[in-house]
Image 1 (cartoon, rainbow, N blue to C red):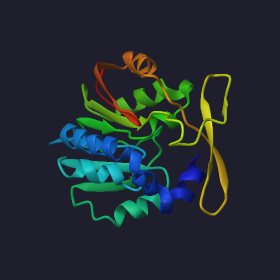
Image 2: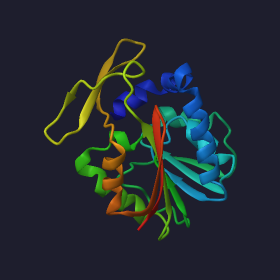
Image 3: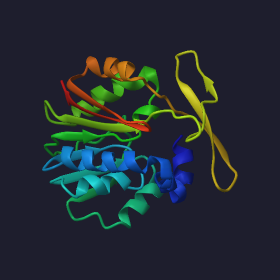
Length: 210
């Protein structure tokens, strides 16, 4: 998956140009701008900084991380502001940045986390944030005709997609599409005050990490 997102970086944001998704995307941008207002945020899987830029408009400070260098270079080219720091980091091995993060963001990342690794990710992410920090996530719902259908399901219940890039190369990646009940259940052991915004093409969640 790391190889896929490194190679996809130049064409990544084309997914946000799909006409049928514009109403949902407008709602997500407004939701994130309000949720991030005044916060000091740690972000994982920031990619090209599309959502980092939305949060940066209202956040106090952001450390935005990604595993891959290519999308981070695109994010750096956007001039997100002196209050935004971009850094390479593994979402499962985040450095201690020594900052009092009162919120964490992980957008379009949860769907790529194996079901077996979800609690490990949440526990590690919480360890880098202040006690009682806010968790902000958004991701895709599966809508036939608007995205690639799953190609297979493994023994643990993870679903996969086969993705093709503009150069013709193909990659198989984990891409899970949890129901609202599955998402709430996965967060229940680590979070309180879970609020889920359910749209047609996307979902978003705001919760408090216990």
